Structures are given as C-alpha cells and as structure tokens.
Length: 237
Image (cartoon, rainbow, N blue to C red; front, side):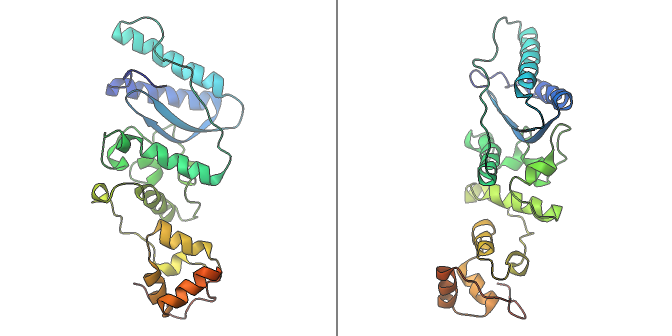
C-alpha cells in the first residue's frame, strides 16, 4: 500500500477506519496495532480463520472505489497487492508494534507517536479510547502481559519511547515508573534486564536498592545469579 499520497486528506483516512470497522466484524479480525500514513497503511491482524485475502480485498476495493469517485479518477488506486508477514514470536511482535507506532515519527509527521491521531499507539498506551475496530487489550499485550492494565500501558509507553529521541520525549516522560521492588523478581535475572532496559534503572540504582557495592552487582550480573530473597527493606534510588 505505498505510492502516491492517497491518504493525504483526513476524509480519506477516516473512510478507511470506517471500512476497517466493517471488515473486522465481517471477517472476525482482531486488530492489535495500526497506522495510516499519507501513502500506506500498516495493520497487525490476528486471525481466527484464513480470511486475510477476502478482508483485504473488501477493504482496498471499497476504499479505492470511494477515492476514485471523490477525486474523479479512474483505474487502479493501489500500486501493488498488499504484502503480509507472519509473526512467529513474541519478541518480533513487540518490535513490529514499536516499528509501526514510530512510523509517523520517522516520517517527520510528529515528534512523538502520542501526537499522531491516525494510529493505534494512543489506544494501546491508554492515552485515548481505541477506535471501534482496534482490540487494544491484545495490542498492549504485544509488549506487556502484566495483569494490571495501567502497568501494562505504562510499560507499552516506555518500550516505544526508548526509540524516540530524548528531545522529542520531553513532556512524555511518564511518572508512573514502578519502583524496583515491583519489577525485580527474586532469583530471576531476566527481571534485571527489564529494570535496566525497559525502565532505565542503572546498576547504581540496583546497588542502592540492595545496599551493596557496584562490584557486587556486577558479579551477580556476570554469573547470572541475582540474590534471593529481596533485602528486608529495599531502598529506592
């Protein structure tokens, strides 16, 4: 779905969203994430049945028909047949969701994905109500499966923001970063990666939390054996 700017007008974008609502209901799709750019669209679709071709045929066909009528044009509106990729891992799904959410930033349409109206980011991140066709509950689980919805939304925002330039993040540094006591799991070194990579805690923060030296933390990380249990009173940085 790439080429000339067929989605340059809000009316064209809105029409596509209305068609998506129909297609999702008609073919039992679940839309986890989405973005409408000026000349292409990205959709993350979960299927219960092999209906992708039929659904896309209806979506593209009806949108093209309306576009030709409005623009008094004839012939093909879409340059090529749509392209689809199978998502076969949780890590790939998370990376794909972030890639889609950051499309408007890379294109220079906004500084932060929260500012762009024509995408699923705000719905997944809990900043706006999702569109009727958008299953934001499944969408945010692409990045965080935490049972607490607000925590999951915060983790979604943080994961996407990691790839936004620091100057563009200004005003979007959410205050709900959880304390280390809520992130770290005794004996689970992977939770340390979550603390440092997702929530930007440092090894110094970890050392202060446990009340040990930086070298001790480095030794724990080197051997992949964080201490258990937690200190009796974890100290926050």
